[in-house]
Length: 308
Image (cartoon, rainbow, N blue to C red):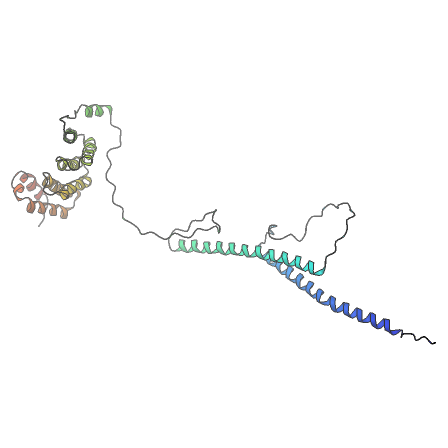
């Protein structure tokens, strides 16, 4: 029997085929590694552009200090496949992208805030306030409010502390006790005014008018309150009380008196037009008083202004 031997070239052909297969498999893996290396280099360059200080919160430094060598311990080596390494590197890239996106949003919000503040300053408005506890670091600019003309505050009584002599003189003025408390309060204010204690009279009469708005003496109280300011050299405050007394009830006992004292206050303020209006209103509304009880005051004021 003859033995037939296999051709010697067969093993070489098989080895060649295996080598070609391995080369075919390894080429895609090498290409993927090259792409990942390129992406990582680009991300590092982008990080250095956004964070020129090299903040360690966002990326690791390229050069780190050497650490002491640890004693070698016989531990089993764990091998990882190429796919596991790629997934780990992709996770790291996604985390870096997320941090870069958050940092970019913060920077954009800060730039927007600066632009708004500059625009507000250029237009003469007030810049928006910035709060450190705001999530973006910026509070929106509040809408401008319309300017409102506030009324002039009412005049305040003298704030200087009275002297002991003045206190003793005021305390010497007795308050009546007739049983009509409202009338007693008014009469006490009248006595203070008549004695020349105008600030004390203003306070007393203002309290009376507030506490007794429907008392029959209220028209007297408002008129006398205006006179206490007028005699103290405060015609603007006096005019307010005279006008209020006349407007509240023009048929009240002291309404015509307040109208004439209103004209006197306007003359003291140099407002001839309003003084003439008040005098004309008095002449038309109270003709009997113009030639009777208040004729002297009416004629005296009419001679002080030219209403033609």
